[in-house]
Amino acid sequence: MAKASNYGAFMERFILQPSSSSHELPLNGLTFAVKDIFDVDGYVTGFGNPDWARTHQAAMLTAPSVLAVLKGGATCVGKTVMDEMAYSINGENKHYGTPTNPQAPDRVPGGSSSGSAVAVGAMLVDFSLGTDTGGSVRVPASYCGIFGIRPSHGVVSTTGVIPMAQSFDTVGWFARDPEILNRVGHVLLPFPDVNPVKPSQIIIPEDCFRLLSIPIDRVTQVLIKSVEKLFGSDIVKHVSLGDYVEDKVTSLKPFMSKENQTQEYNIPSLAALSTAMRLLQRYEFKNNHGEWVREVQPDLGPGIRERVWEALGTTDEKIDVCQSLKTEFRSALTDLLGDSGVLVLPTVPGPPPKLQTDPTTLESFRARAFSLLSIAGVSGFCQVSIPLGLYDNLPVAVSLLAKHGSDGFLLNLVQTLYGSIKEQVEVAEKTSY
Image (tube, rainbow, N blue to C red; front, side, top):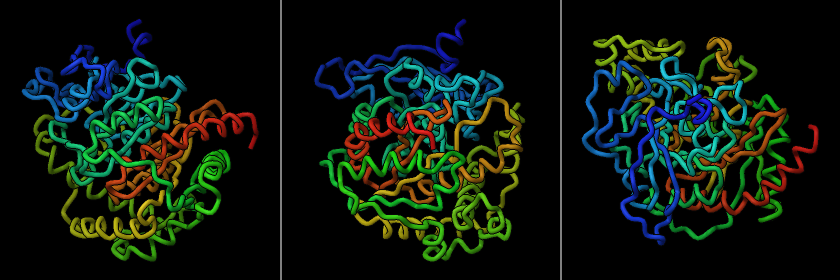
């Protein structure tokens, strides 16, 4: 019965009181949970795997990001289940059980911040902290029908958080409404006070939306109509992002493969971007954890085991190209967006997969997902996933991206747009596409 009452979201429950209970504090009265990748003084940080927990001591300090939200007035109520070693976007954990997706109990909750997303989606907490390296906040947010932010890379401290791959690791958070998402941002972000700004342009990359397995209009029209209602139609622009990236980012060439060009479900330049990102991620993961994996030989679940051991075989070939690619891609995307432009993307290519789907059958879905997820990953831009109700009784989401350091602007924009988005979702849910 314990699982039914907490949806299997928690590793352990405890109470950390806020530093002060002043009513003036931005997070006063709110509760939150933290992914079991954050250090909390006196608790072992388990990293999703019992062999890791068994071979590590209790933390002596609490991660600064956790301390910041306690100082902001929130109360921590426990640590949440995560995918082993943060190496999955699925949300299944063979050791601790898979947190139940509150929107779709027969589907995966998404990972690796699975328990943090479920705790918010199931209304067990007001917000939660997770991490996003390859998509570990954005994916579970979209699968569980809630808001999730991957902030600009490097703006929220990752001290006291077990690293996965430092070139991409970020501390993100989840909430059920954009107002609380924004309030947490005011506490965690170094430059949150941005007046709501009208975006200079809202860019819709048509090719990225063709990766969707549900009707494109169900996602794009909800957003476009909301934008037009608030800001007018002249700021909406349509582009082919794949062509733009292929033209502007020459350091992608070593990662372009014949295979990428022939797979109809992919955009060659974005598939190449994803290949480069995952190579650097494997290399950094090996440097962080290879020695421990070889020494302990941990018991790892299906899919994760293969990825971890593949990472341990990574060499430094092409790693220098990955670093220059990050710089070149960020610059190209900054040029495309300008100062206050926003890029719209599907968060993921479709609804959450069914529980215990064979990992090999998910390969094409993963490939399309990482083509989309690597855009913020490689650029370091901030991205918010926004819930758009249900299609065929399964959660739908869309994402907005803004340039590095525009997190406050993006959170304000999401909050401004969401009233109108909700109205459009209600219309869309009554319409068959």
